Length: 119
Image (cartoon, rainbow, N blue to C red; front, side, top):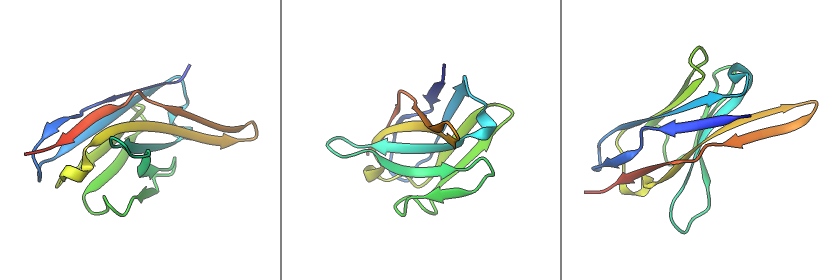
């Protein structure tokens, strides 16, 4: 059974930093593309960043240059380093694992961690 457990959220002031972590179990972590998504109140869930099993990264335009996604396959963990946080970054942040193989796509979500940016 796949489990993704996020941690590291909290309340920070504009301009500050946070690092989110997502620990995965129940999957062969190194085989999966991992990603971070977020959902603000009243809005749809949106992509923040993804990292392939090969380490290639992709970012939403709104976070480019401020956020960095990384993975540690030895620890089955994906990270999101968030710098220069803005109030509009306030959202619940979700970790996602994704794999497509001959059996079809397989995707799982964590329970989410709240990030609030406010003065």
